[in-house]
Length: 152
Image 1 (cartoon, rainbow, N blue to C red):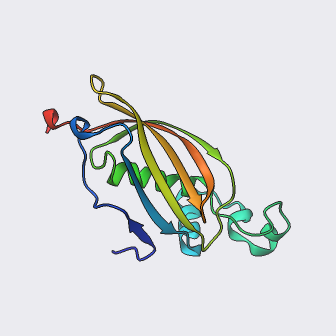
Image 2: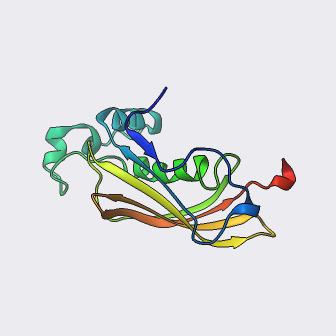
């Protein structure tokens, strides 16, 4: 099913370790919907009312409902798993710092940038970030095991 709320900058697939270079970037944009938040609550079993209850959330420091932080972080996973390195990638680690809330209706841009490559171990380190309206809402670093043509 086509997600009309997501736009990728490049086609999905695989970039093998042999073709990855420092500075390579990929991103996607996705509008976070009420349905996304409801589905994430169902899958994760995190039903915190700050995500689901308008009245409750209005009386919090956020003054309204916000998306789950890990829903936003999941967009980083989508870029890594679909674009860079893409299909066949194995996540080894991810650090996250949440800088601002994401609200229903926000268009999130999730981006990864290659900062280190260990060809011998097939490990790729990437700076990761998400932004809304040009403002960083999440930043971190991911380490992944990239696919290799040698093992195809």
